[in-house]
Length: 517
Ligand SMILES: Cc1cc2nc3c(=O)[nH]c(=O)nc-3n(C[C@H](O)[C@H](O)[C@H](O)COP(=O)(O)OP(=O)(O)OC[C@H]3O[C@@H](n4cnc5c(N)ncnc54)[C@H](O)[C@@H]3O)c2cc1C
Image (cartoon, rainbow, N blue to C red; front, side, top):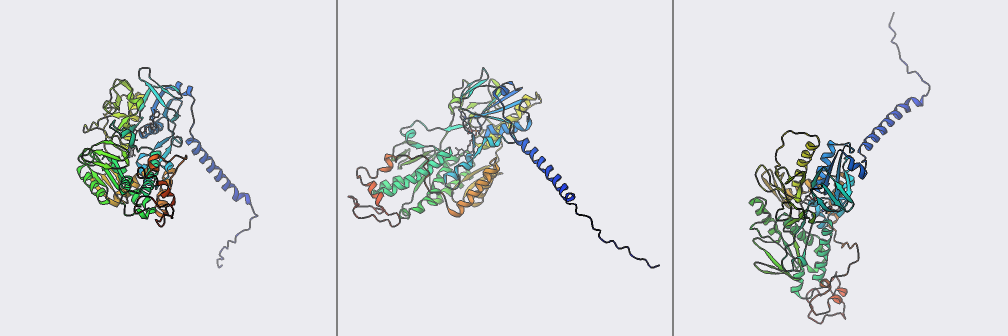
């Protein structure tokens, strides 16, 4: 018998829509439940003041900067149950200011908001608590801190209140020198450069115009060097393009430092690279130079008198007043002298980190630099010590050592310098490294996305050169005035055609007009 293959015809089933829908529905619901669990697990649960007081161990972190947030987040990983161990950050600001990226705000590429990370945002997924308040008084003996929102006791405390730029008490310096440390300063720097260029445009005497176009930075460290490069960059690769008639008036940007080389905390090779890069751009470098005094239109150094109407100060920091007032051992700049475990001497339950601390590295005995990198490294170390205290872990601890990950400086148009792993990288690769490192290390993906967007947009459409005046402000006398006593400055400015450089008839100045008028 021949074998007849069995033919399997598809059978027709009656339509069963639920048969398909049900698995998808179940899968969908399971996914939603999972997502909800993840979101709920990350959602921060706030605590009352009583809950803080009643916690088994209260960790009070003064300052939500680089050091403070590092400790809060590290401890948060160990103590998700905030009723057991309470971690409270107190800061007058609700943001972590990511200072290394401030230059990108000052040079007109990035929105000021995008270099600040919301502390409330950082709470998502981390159980630390936050109190927006001013720290007014620290009582180490009573183990409590007076804040503008009441008194907070503590079992362990960390002082990480940062620092302020200190301007020496030399003639005219505190009156005329400008600081650079906040997003407001970054916007104000841009505003001031615009004001200065406008004043140069109105000035009818070449000497006065030169004064307005001369910018002196006091301080040859990282901040001074990056500040000088930022000012030069903003003027020459942004702002002055809108003033073609000032094209021949080369702005003078001067960086003056007391040391015999720039960035003295780096290697001599790096200092030399920095000097070369700045000099190539036309930035004047004055080393072994002390600024002695300043007036509205001059900066006096131990070598010369510089006719300049702008002085920025970037030489030296000091601890904040609430720290300097503590009755403990201080360094000359007011920061707290800590022991080799970053503890405040005589108070084993109190630590100091970052710019508030005067610390030495155990591995080589050198001073720990006042940088964000060092603050975070100290934060990690102190978080571990606090965890041991809370868990009564009596295993031996090692003294604190700071090992730098490297050094980066942004030095203008697509150039910079980087010291990484004992090697020095300069130029465009250093510029890329600088942006890559800082944008990727800001602790918020939201900020990262926005920063990348800003940098791309500015690369395509240019820097921001509009003057942001959040509140109408009077034009300062020195801006409104041009050559002393000529009384024509305002009229000339009003009738000057920026596109042609011509003045309308009837407004001719009584003095011989200079080239721009
Ligand atoms: C322009 C500029 C650029 C810089 N660039 C770099 C860089 O490229 N790399 C680098 O490593 N470092 C850089 N630094 C240095 C770096 O910013 C600091 O070393 C670092 O911020 C110190 O960290 P901190 O944790 O000690 O304090 P901070 O991060 O300064 O935080 C201190 C916190 O304390 C709060 N606070 C202060 N006083 C009170 C008070 N009385 N009450 C309540 N809150 C208070 C402040 O609001 C602040 O949030 C730069 C600094 C500046 C100014």
